[in-house]
Length: 259
Length: 167
Image (cartoon, rainbow over all chains, first blue to last red):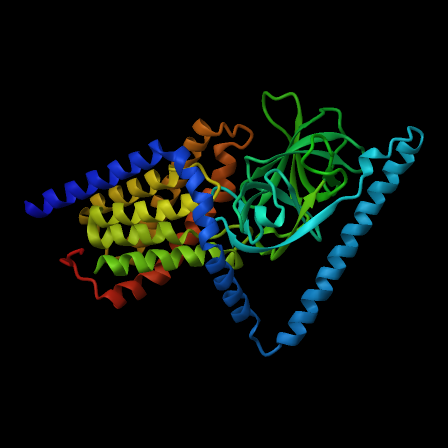
């Protein structure tokens, strides 16, 4: 009997705490970036420890070299893709003499020190914050293409929402036919492009890049390749499933773009 | 089991989830260690311990992710509470029952999360069917398989008995 009473009290306490936490959620949201900030050095240390453990293999040197070469190939592939897009764009824009959209961007490199513990949202914790010049809404890229956008910034750490998160929206262009759409995250590490015109000839294999609408994402950054195209019941547009140009779960370093 | 042990296990699981778990993704899917441990504590230590483990796990998840703040706290606490309440009625020594319980709990927790997201964030372009097919079912299955491997180790480590008292 006493035990039962004890359990009921415990359950009520837990539920009360949960409700209280939700009621003060706006204050908690402010607090959580400070908590992330405080624990960033620990996460960074633990992350380095895990990475070191991973690297201690008999073929450590070969593995290192392989990683560097892979990164170099990725970088060159991305540069080639972007150059093609820029060439296309140049041809079209030369007549308009409007090169202002092609302002070169500089960036802040950052290390990934944590990943989203929830299966639901997709984000990264990076080791640079406002003290390094990181601001919310900065675009985040890697050597292979677009990664996401900074959403929360602390002093020494920040959180970036990935392109695979359903809460992120990016204006995109299909490189082959210059048709636009809106990219959003989809479950299973993929993305979905919505609002593709019904008469569009978009097909699997088409490369997708940022459209440069708005002020967050610069134009021409590679995002990925279309895997599947379809039409949803009751909607007046096509959709496409996109495979990001990189495995976002294995990112170690990213670049935050200063526009 | 002491409260300290419970918190140590949960924090360790959380750190693994935050720092390491992406390395064992299969086809973009990773297991949820925190759900696994919430169900474990609920099955073997009752609804009180289950709800407490859910509360701590949810708080950790909500703090370090960009998820809706409070959603994981409530949903994981409820998961612990419900599984703990059901556990006396189940043959919990069976590995199949344990795996099935983890699978169902994880799937229901994620389906509930989908509806919370739908209400709060109005994510309308992704259907429940998409989530079920690409995230909820594969991830729950992965977590359940992991539980079949991990539960015997934990049971052995803490020498759990039918009449074991929590805290």
